[in-house]
Length: 196
Image 1 (tube, rainbow, N blue to C red):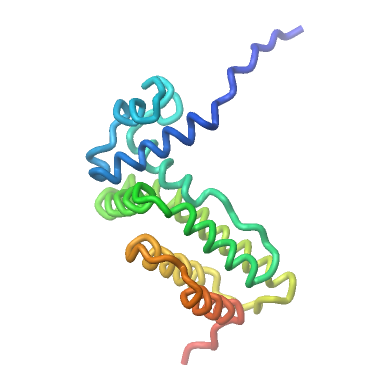
Image 2 (image 1 turned 60 degrees about the vertical axis):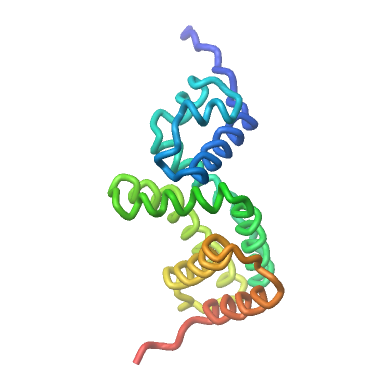
């Protein structure tokens, strides 16, 4: 009979959340240059080893802190429902100064560092792109979207609009914005006319 080791102690989700929030706060104070494992551990109220076990490098920590902001996908109901829920989730995720500043800090670092760019794309941008693709596919299956709805372009337009309005301009998605954004989403889901 083969002996099996005892499973390790499960990770504490409260510690995970505290670590990532602390990392975002540090980046808000001074970008990636301000982020350290030691500072993150102190601000999160955990041991340095707790941080290192989860995020062996500063890059791991920085990208994970930003990726956590977009980790929760909306549920798929109707075009209107998923659009409203998606905007609500985005607004909630980026409500704090730390969330906004850390996203911009990692995105800026990605522009000059191929490794950060690859990680930022894979762990932050691709999951959002996959969420958009899934919502469009779901809408197509329900007859709520055209078969030629442009997935890549829809992703670029919708994410770009939300980042610009909520993260860069730091404006709330008020009723007027939501009306326009909903109209834009319906237009994209209907499929674009062919280019001349």
